[in-house]
Length: 247
Image 1 (spheres, rainbow, N blue to C red):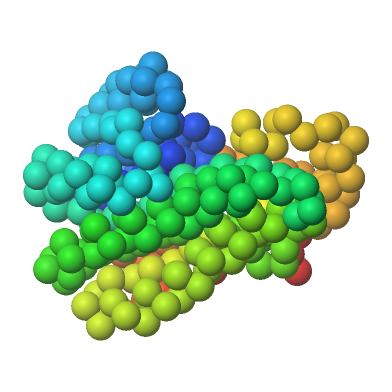
Image 2: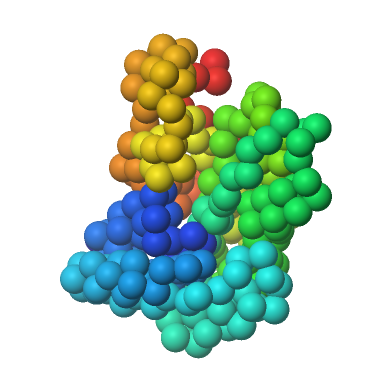
């Protein structure tokens, strides 16, 4: 129970990678708060699953891209748990189009959800972590932010921005025992990749040295390690969990 009596916030927690991280933390003894966008039923079911691990869970229907909403959520989490030890910025969407076809709203919504949300949460938890002189922040980025992907200029820009945020913030807060890292995900089996055509998925799989898409558990286990005390001397690092795709 390496995270016993500690508290985490995970953004975009009800599906895919976020859900996997929430559950992995809960199984290790961590109390978890998460936000969601649409499905209150999924949030309720996840809370019950977390609580079955013997820890507390609380969910918030909050737009991660809205600063004031995030500020209110973070305050309530701090009041409930008395501390905030971990922040996982996982919230993300895609609106893939070639730049010539991409609308301003396609750009803005992806940047707000994927990148501005990380600013919103980091800004609102950092004072608490600094007072505690302890904390760990993990940003879920993508190899699209490392090497770029055609048809994803908005998504690639948002994920590259998360890498820059990770490195800059790590330099700012390392002296107060707060580490900031990122995971650059490759192709992971989630709802987001399930809609890809089978022919395209096979083509992409052939490019992955591991010859498979990753699982949510692959990411969740890596996330728990980077948040743990075992990784306390790692900061500003971008861990590629991609089966070797971005080599």
